[in-house]
Image 1 (cartoon, helix red, strand yellow):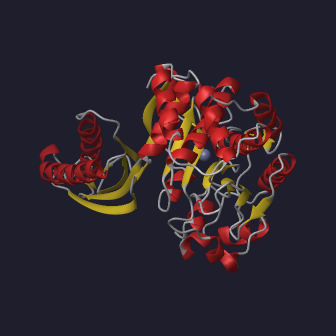
Image 2 (cartoon, rainbow, N blue to C red; image 1 turned 135 degrees about the vertical axis):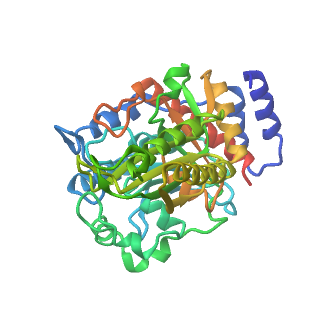
Length: 440
Ligand SMILES: [Zn+2]
C-alpha cells in the first residue's frame, strides 16, 4: 500500500464514531505523521541486558535459572522506571496495564519473553518484550491515549514449550507441569521460584473475548528478510507441525553370506525413504518443509544387514490441508518403498500442532504502519514456534519480524541491528494505534 492510500485509510478509520476528545487527538497524530519510539533507549536496555546470563558459550537465561531470575528482575525494573505497574499472574507471567478511554473495551496485548535457550543470544524474546515496554512508555510520553486498555506482557518459559502463554489460554496439561526445564527444575517448581502459585493457575487463564488482540514483535530467526533486503516481516501465521516416528522392519542377516537379491535391508529402505521425502516436499511450490532428522539403526554393526531402522520426520506448513496431504503422501511412499525392499513401514505420530493463522485486520495495520514509516516489508510465515500461537486460541493475533543478521538464532552469534529493532518497535507502536481503531 502507498503512503497516500494508508493515510486515506487512516482518515477513513478515524471518521468512524469515537468517544472522547483524546481519541481524536490520537487518530489525528496517526494521520499526520507516524509516531516513533525512543530507539536509543530501547537499544540501550538491550545492550545492558546482554550482560545478564552471558557465559563463554552464549546467553544462558534458561527458564527458572538464577540468570532467568536476574533477567526478570531487570525487566521488572524497566516496568517500574517506565511508569508501568507490574502485576504477576499465577503462572509468573509479567503484566502491566495502561487504562484506555473506553472502559468497556478488552485490552490490546503486546509483548514477548525474556528467557533464552542454552547457549543462545540476546535478541530472541527481549527485543519484543522491551519494545512493548518502550511502546507503552512512548505513548504515555507523547500523551497518546488509546480507546482500548494497552497491556504489556512478558511471558515466562517460552523456550521450554511456550509454558506461560499456554497457561494463560488454559492449554497447559498436568504433564507439562512435570516437564523438566533446562535449568533442571520442573515447570511446577519453576512457577513457584519466579513468584507464581501453581495451585492458582486457573486464575491466570484468559478466555475468548478477554483480549481485543495480540501483537508480538520478534526477530525473524531465519534469513529470508535479509536475503530479500526487506526491513519488516509481516507474519501471516505460525506454521503447523507434525512429527512422525517411523519404524522400518527388515531382517538382520549376515552381510557376507546373504546375496544382494535376498535381503530385507531396513537401512536401504530408510535411505530411499529419506530421499523420497525430500523429493516429494520439493516437488510443489510453497514454503512447506520436511526433515528426516533422527535415525536409529539396529543392530548398527559393520557386518550385519540392518534389521530395523527407526527414523523421524518433521513436517511443517502454514496450511493444514497441505500438512494432511503430505502426511498421506509420505505414508504411500512408505508402502511403495516397503514393497520394493521387502520391508515394513509403521508410522506413529508424535506431535501434531495446528497452524496459527494471523488476523487479517492486524496484518493490514502492520503493513500500513510499515508503509507509513517508509519501511519495506513482506508477508511471511513463521517456521518457529512463538507465544503468539497460544494466544491465537483466544484472540486475534499477528507478529512483526525484524531481520536476523545471517539468519542466525538460538546461537551466541544471534544479532539484529539496532536500526532494525527500532524500526520494528516503531511499526509495533503505529500498529497498536491503528489496531485501536479497527479492533472492536
Ligand atoms: Zn522467542
